[in-house]
Length: 295
Ligand SMILES: Nc1ncnc2c1ncn2[C@@H]1O[C@H](COP(=O)(O)OP(=O)(O)OP(=O)(O)O)[C@@H](O)[C@H]1O
Image (tube, rainbow, N blue to C red; front, top):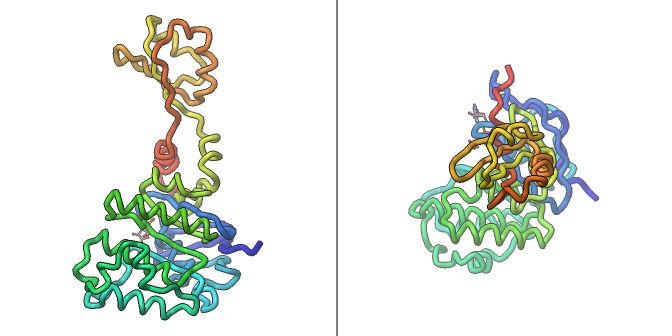
């Protein structure tokens, strides 16, 4: 299987500000990778390097070639933040222009129709709303029929319906075997679709794996119940971090939900309305990215 993206010891600085310190990554065909990180972590910078728009040090290849090489460029579609748009150009013209860049382009009109965007075809880009522009930019990214897509915060500004339609389209693209790198701050959305998550922090991936693997490493849970037992009893149970009484509820914060639950089994007849909430991706993300920057 030919690797789509390969990065080894990639480093990048803007002047004396080092943004990427040591990036190592392999992406295989058909993978959907969710790239997440706090504002300013370097996600867009990394995508720009993969596109050949910025040059870092270390080894980087896309379809086995240097980023930006013409042969790999035609297999690539991107939707970046702040994509330049010429206000006077119409949607139809922009789609034609984008299609003309690729020898394997799709029919622009058919694509606009499929995306329910045909009405916007005669409109000038300058008068479109932010959400409409995002949807058009997505169609532009796809019209060249790319094998690899870079989508940088694609759903920003889209209304709920458009976001839903967008993620459905991503699923369809998955069926077609497209490889995608998607950045998003909407963790609930990205976790649904990504085969693999990359968490960028302090210039490195502090996590590279599936959501399931991430959750296996982070076993924390919140157990809520009602009980006539004294809350002090729960403080002494294994892995219990903190116990809060918010009458009538007792809230037990555990660093290892399974371990604490096992210890609760003998008391089950005194516990009522028990519920368990595992750490969400957002909880884990905040733990991993809340750490101070390295000096
Ligand atoms: N052209 C530039 N010159 C100097 N610094 C820059 C430039 N572009 C980005 N930076 C800085 O590099 C860092 C990484 O920026 P980047 O846009 O890659 O982050 P990001 O993870 O995409 O952030 P966000 O989630 O806010 O979009 C930030 O501190 C940013 O201020």
